Image (cartoon, rainbow, N blue to C red; front, side, top):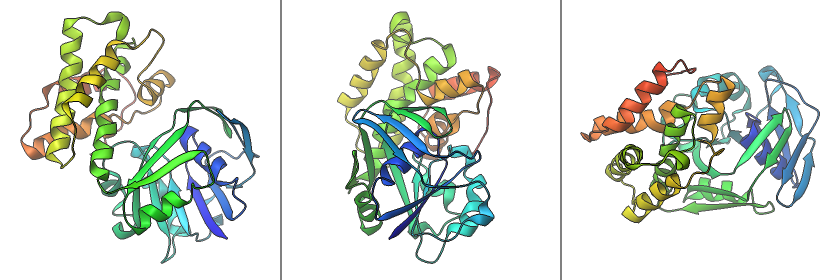
Length: 297
């Protein structure tokens, strides 16, 4: 029996936990702030349900084989009370979060050799604790090597496609490049398509080009064709669309992962001597908008 504990049962974490709990060879525990009786996820394949053990007090936790962390990036330190009770010498920790700094955020909490950074594409929304709608098929990317490959194997019996990549750096930066434009609708509270014009295109292009340049300096392969397709997608964003979780968090009055999404572009740009004026301006404006803000750098 493989023991798994998931910290952060939001839309992504709850969906992952529900899928893993379908395998009877897994003993799944969910570590949550708010108790709930069960997980119910409306997936593209139909409703799945699960009744994992739900803990709300870290002192009730015991060591497991795998810890999966699906909290927001700014909540890294808040996982320490759980990790203190969940980690044993053999425990491996998968960080399922946005951005490209999984290792940096958790290196002081978990031995780096046991950290598995996870990039996930899994559109989902939570309506209440334990109640989630999964909109599309999920895809997970992890680094090649034993830890990454063992983590990917956990999903072999699920509808989430998980695979290990020799060039994980590129996988992570491609996702960040594609997501970097979300800061624009999150700031304007408007989809970019209906208000598209040459000036707005120049702003979006600046955001994306800067991200790609910094990613390449970090060792990622980001084709120019990917940059162009990302900009084209933004030009077609329909009214009613949003900047994903960044936009949703702003509308809900929740802190935003702006540092992990765009602040990191500015910080690593400075490290490499790459100017990132468009990202810096938008990050500054979003911070000044009165939106909830947590600085994690």
